[in-house]
Image 1 (tube, rainbow, N blue to C red):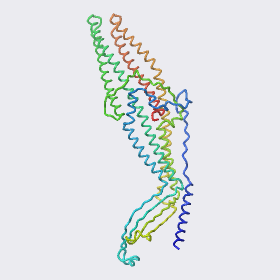
Image 2 (image 1 turned 30 degrees about the vertical axis):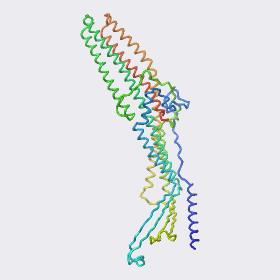
Image 3 (image 1 turned 180 degrees about the vertical axis):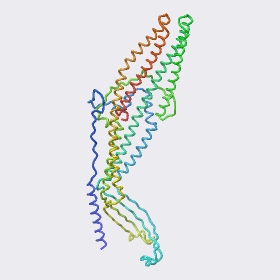
Image 4 (image 1 turned 135 degrees about the horizontal axis):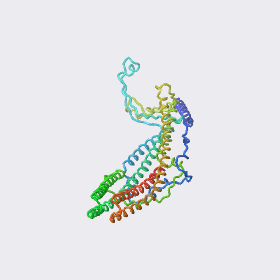
Length: 470
């Protein structure tokens, strides 16, 4: 008889399990589809690119050829604090993603228990068991929820999207770091070049002071001319101190980027710098695959989309199977006896009815978060397009200006030299020489700044297109 009942219960449990597995394929959760966003007009340029090839596809090792810069980028990627923080965030997100994958598995717990119960002598059990009752058991409990409506699947996808968002975040930090190291390095080279020009100017002006003093003794100029030349000489010396202070701060900035204590850095010269790679933008839609921040924004949207699925599925009934079994006995000596075996299987559907509006609030919050993530995704894409447009315009502008700046420096250096000769021979006044000197120095410094801006614009365009993390 016991055997018949046991087979009967087993048959019901098997039937309930088959029903659960069958229902598991009946998902109500929707699949994510990327929203339609216009990308053709993201780049503000007269020559809209049609080729999918982009400078962002280049590795930073192929773009930057300076040996010192390559070394510093490599060190920064290993030691920078922001990179290391991003890696830890990625590890944490990966752990949640693994947990999400395990959502389909049942929970299982097991352990020994001892229970002592004291009954009232006037109660039903107290009249049978005088005093108390001791129970010993070793019980295993198993619980499994069928993913009928896709809630577990959506939770799994949400955790995976969260992990991929952290990966994209790490890539965004990497791209920004490479850009910051390159710009700081180029800034140091530009400051070195400006310092060299300033030192040459100081030497020239010191010699000019001696010359103007001799001309005063000869009666060709007044003391005013001597004072003006001395003032201009000291102005150049003050400029040298400002540039040296800027170099000191720039080296400290580079130290932070490399995760090092403040120190001096070996470096090349600005004249040796050139980026020979042809500037290719690629089609605007490639920003969706190249820009880590755009990818991170979309993964955030996917995560909130899946959490909306979870919130919606919470309104439907859940099918849960629970089972417990083990050994139970009133006597410890009989605990491991075959007659101590017991088992219980329970299957049921639970439909939420009244829960203080928690499910409705969860759904409303999930929908609001999803819309917020969509707007952020759209904004991030627009910002990316704007940054590409600005970087491209700056690069083209600085490239056009460079030749004009070179011609300006050559003309003003000639004017300075001619003014000095004319002053010595009495055909010009000292004001012409002072003006020519100041203009020549400003033009040389501007030429260096122009070269730096050209390099920086290339680095910014590379970053804006999503280069550096591959």
